[in-house]
Length: 120
Image (cartoon, rainbow, N blue to C red; front, side, top):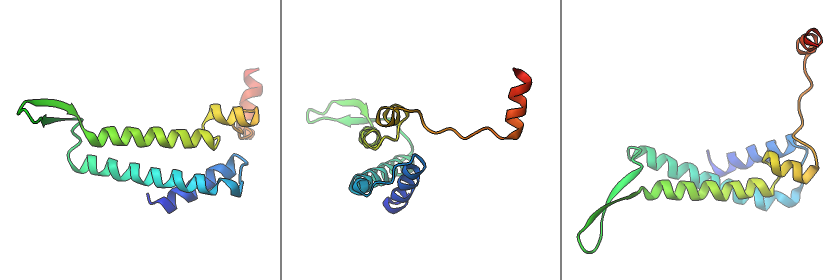
C-alpha cells in the first residue's frame, strides 16, 4: 500500500476508536511513510526469494552466514511502526492506558442475545 492509502486506513481506524484529533496528522503521516517503506522492503525480500540468511564474505576472504539485511530492516521498520501505533493509542494496551477502557465492543445481535439467554 502507498503512504496515502496507509494514512487513510490509520485515520479510519482512529475514527473507529473515537479519536479524530487533527493534532495527530503529522504523526499519522510519519507512520504511513514507515508502513509504506516496510511494505517495499518486504516486497523486495519476497522478490529475491525469501532467503532469511545470506552468505557474506568479509575482507579477509572468510565466508560467513548472516541475517538477510532486508529482514533486519523490515523488523526495524515494524518496531518503529509499533512505537507510533502505541503513541496513537492503537494497540489494546495503549488504548486502555489512554482511555481507561478497552476497545469498544459491538453489541451482540438478536441471535447472540437469544443464545446467551439460553446458556444462562
